[in-house]
Length: 210
Picture 1 (cartoon, helix red, strand yellow):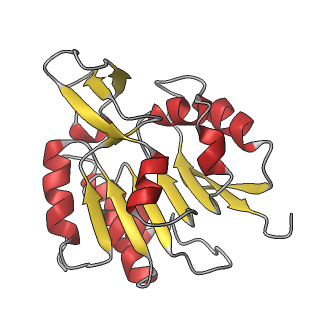
Picture 2 (picture 1 turned 180 degrees about the vertical axis):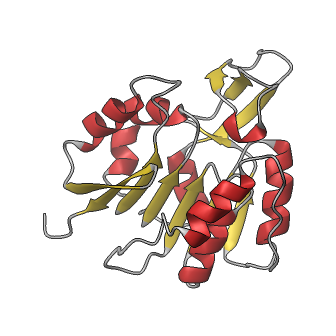
């Protein structure tokens, strides 16, 4: 299918990162069956995964309405991609958007319960996504969620899905939410992951021999 690129947004550098620079061109050592693309934006990574792993189910999660509209358009040719208009968070709640006037690719959020301001988004947890995917394991979890990775990994619920995840690709956002990388490393420390860096992302691969 054809992919839309918007001018004067992060679409072009993101497209370049995924398709030209091969940031997600990882040797997993196995064929993934369930892939979660957290912070799918307009769908370039989801399309890349769907093309590379045609037998995998890709769950693309993106909360921002304009991004989500393009995500649906960019992924409609791929029956193995399912799109979810939510933000990833440790639990089901509503989040206030802290910077609604910023570019849609850089929304930052905070929990507001059921009575936040007018600009809010609904959340979904990683465990709920696993249920939606009909799987007890995540083969590949990609996260580019503008600092919310700190909240995900610091929550006590993280242990349940980290133990069932074979590979993670995480773009960290310590520059505007300090503590993201330490939170990830603390949570993963008790699990046998090999850590490498690729471009802007941290890559963690579970050691099958451990």
